[in-house]
Amino acid sequence: MKKLFIIKLGSTFSDLAGETGDFEDWIYKGLGETAFEITIVDVEHGGSLPKIRDCAGVILTGSHSMVTENPTFADNMDIWLRKLAKYDVPVLGICFGHQLIAKAFGGDVHFRPQGIEIGTVEIIFEKEAENDPLFAEVPPNKIYVHEAHSQSVTILPEGAVRLAINENDNNQAFRLGKCIWGVQFHPEYDSHVTKEYIRKVSADLKSDGREVEDLLKSVRETPEAFGILGKFSKLL
Image (cartoon, rainbow, N blue to C red; front, top):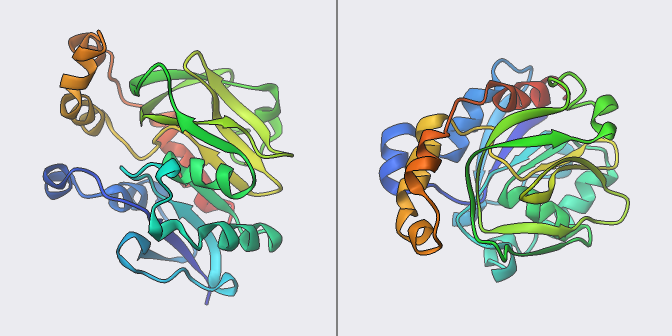
């Protein structure tokens, strides 16, 4: 029987994971009820990528690794992702996963010259999102999302459809083909997780002239973003 696979590409901070769980746990919570068994594959620590015929859908987690560092656990991902696309397997890439998809299909990923984008920010949907299977029912125009990334997709793959932007990043969400999506933001984060990420990098933020307290005060819950996970599970 086919399964919904969460491909674990990294871990959050160990103390935070001990308190609230890890990336895959937060994603699992957001998926809600689904017709498929959910299986987690930890490729960062040697887990084998599932066979295409076994995949009802795939979610790629975030990671503290950088795509441009070409981490060894991602060596086989490019070919595997292209096979998923060939057989129209729904895929959702989150943050690092979003960047990994872009790279696998010929896009570019680089460090952000303006530094890390972190905290709760607004993203604005492009017109193309109105008829997108994943984003069509999300509240129109813009929503709040949680962010924590030092790299961005600078050039989308050929044929990709840009779905969301903001003032900090031109590629907050995109779709490839019928059913492969990348989102730069973290729909699985809640306000507590986001605040912890801000606190963890507060020294770097201060050295860049960022107001840490202002970032913390601006954090809010992001139910529309969180709901994207459940919507994805219903598309399978």
